[in-house]
Each structure stands twice: as C-alpha cells, then as structure tokens.
Length: 143
Image (cartoon, rainbow, N blue to C red):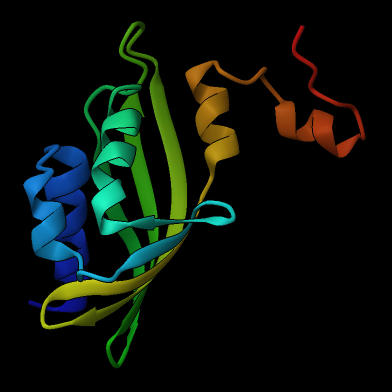
C-alpha cells in the first residue's frame, strides 16, 4: 500500500467505521499526534477517547483525501470531511490538513490542522459568523 492508501484506510476504518481496534494496528507505539488539540499531543492510547468524543457529536462521517503530496516516508494531505448534525440532518463540511510519517505501514509521526472553528459553528456550538466577529475584536462571552 502507498502512504496515501494507508492514510485513507486510517480515516475509513477509525473515523468512518469507528473501528477503534485499528488504532493499535495503524499507529506506531510511540506516536503522539500533534495539533489536533493545540498544546496537547494525543498518544495512541488516548486516540480512542478522541474518536469516540467526536463521533458522538456527528452522524455518518466520510473523509476524502482531496490532495496529497508524498516525499520519502512523509505524506502531506488536505482532507475533506463530510458529515451531518444527528438531530437535524443538517450537513457539515470541514477541511483539514495532516502531515504524517510512515514506517512499516504504520503512522509513526503526525501533525494535524483541523478547522475546529467552522466545525463547532456548523454543529451549532458557536454562533454563526463567529470568526468574522472575532476578527473585529469582539469577544464571544458565555453567560
């Protein structure tokens, strides 16, 4: 399998199918995913908690590798994620980026950028147009 195929399988098995056993199969023992939650790496052991938390918020998930660039054992990919709000069926579309290094068919190093702002806005957990509002200098305050 190419690194692109391995990464697509990662998204299909873990994120689309919810196969948490694939985490141990597909991630290296010492991997720590950087960037998913700023200032906090996610270990292989912690990944299942993250997957369950995010999948619990969503309907069916489809992840597409929209663009990929491979260099040696590294892969950079732009991801396109489609899902829906379970209660309403309202579609959610979010993009992200990942850079991953592979050894022996496993992801052994990874760096993620994911549009959580848009994601939580589309879920209804942030007000509409939160980003443009924040760019004006206004604050989002919760009572």
